Length: 253
Image (cartoon, rainbow, N blue to C red; front, top):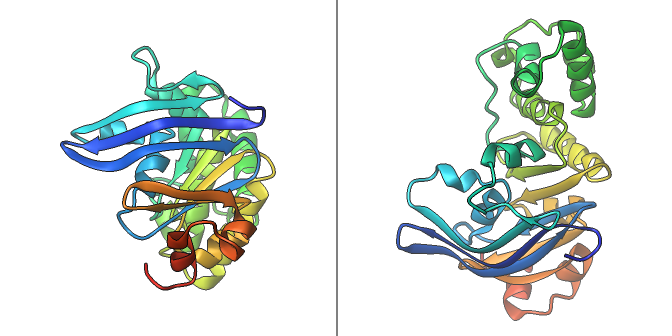
């Protein structure tokens, strides 16, 4: 593993039953900044993302060959605890999924599972997480209100706060703004950029403009294969592969 690398994937092939979803992917993901995965629907980018915290384990019939190293350690060994991996590698999904509970309890949930904390400690950590997610000023006077009362964009930022509350080293985003209005999308993108200065961020997006705005490096996937991986500016302005050039120029996808 090279210096500054958070994840190293080597020869990763993923199957759902007999169907191969990802073919022989090898990629290093930096410990700093934002990495984007782009490509048309069904290209394997979300499958690879979920390999990084073993979320695919919950899918019946899923299997993986190859190696996925997190800080130099293989997270797919028989002795590795997937729950411990997910504490280090948080995830925010395409659609916000707040629990049917108060705003405060949503943020405190993971902290209560991982540590015994007093109410005062939970309040301090919850405020830190909500501030980090850019939501504190909007909810500080109604923390006991049910999370379902928030707007869609606020609910998504609440889910980000919930993920941040357990202090992960990595945060994965799977199409986090696809269901949001333009203003909420902008807030989420600003948050992704800010978080990329503090921890490892990997984002899957169909939105090429979004990738160009938030990502330091971008990986283009097609038909389950990694086609090209480069600094974002280079990939969008001077791609090396003709398939990449066709996709980023809008000729297909």
